[in-house]
Image 1 (cartoon, rainbow, N blue to C red):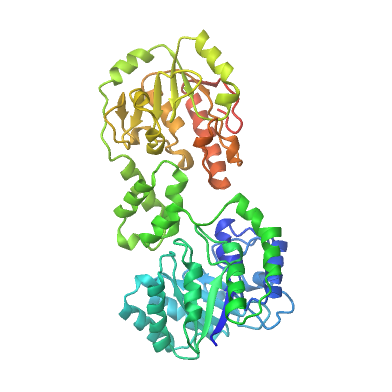
Image 2 (image 1 turned 90 degrees about the horizontal axis):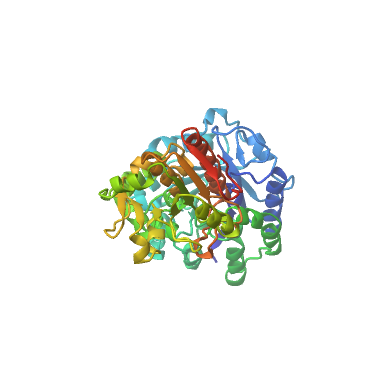
Length: 525
């Protein structure tokens, strides 16, 4: 029978979903629950010098900090932490004495291979079990992977991993890598597999590996509730249930379900993880999932647009997340279209010395529609809506910078549109340069409402009133007057948008007369 062992990485990989802020008591409950469930190897978090000590966070600056979440009675189980190459000095690591973690998983990219293996040797010399995590296994040619295995054999670590960093490994890829490892790795070194679920293959790949007849010790990584960045990981509770039923294991499911119910479900509600089209797109391009997260958070792109941006990426940039790089590609993509400004002079004349009302799709546009209609009736005002056609009155113009929203408009509505250059269409009133309307606040740099206000300011408008521009609640149902406009994203993103909007609106109000007709709930100016 295969010698299969489960390594749970909830407190480490799951930390990407909550900034590793589990809380000390919750972290202890998780390690105790995993121990009660019979999980073989428990990962407690990161060990890093790129964090400050915080007892509620599972990024540890010393192994003494990690010891705080480890039960006094380990029941023969192994406790580990992960170290990213270059993020901790081995000189700061004390010799192993059994008081804290038993092993260290060392993760590195191919470009750092030689120096990273030297680090692994030094950690091993200090008495720790060493788990070698050569990230993005699919980035290695067969010969490069064989050379890596040969180097690993030279100092015999505890375990060597096949790592599906971007969740794109198919069953045939996994078996190809496994047989390379099995046939060439020294028999006393355990073989590990770490997967992500971008293409919904983590569970099937784990089953595939357990079905291979081998005498080798196998470690398969998972996390409770699949908690992990983007699409998440293999679910511990699903996998151990499968092992109980098919491989004769005797893991206890109830403690894992209790952890989901009492702790992890709350984190999921705050910042969900799981399969999504953006994560699928990143996987098929063999690219870091943070790129998908960045593009998805923009809420301005169609899936085709995301795919086009991934097509623009250089191969060597895909492996490690580079925020400045993806932001540059995003801006390059968004400004690639043409402009059509023949009506701008006409528009300036129409706006001259007049008030402008800008109506966003926020819930107050419906709840306080009488205020809006009354304001328009009593004032000489030009009405702009943002990304949609307002049902309660006919706007003079519709400003949109969002292709997804533009596609939802009728042909008649498009004829009244002022669009940014990222939207390809001839049947619009005018088309203006996308880049010209950006602001300096990252979270709202291309927020459509702020772009519209800047556009109006550039046309000489000095008096602008706002309605339905409310900011964002954590409850997505509270954000829009129309249900079909609702989108879901992380609370941290929403908070950043609210803060950014408030800051930029305040800056605008120093230059023009800017006020609200409806009551904004989450932003002010």
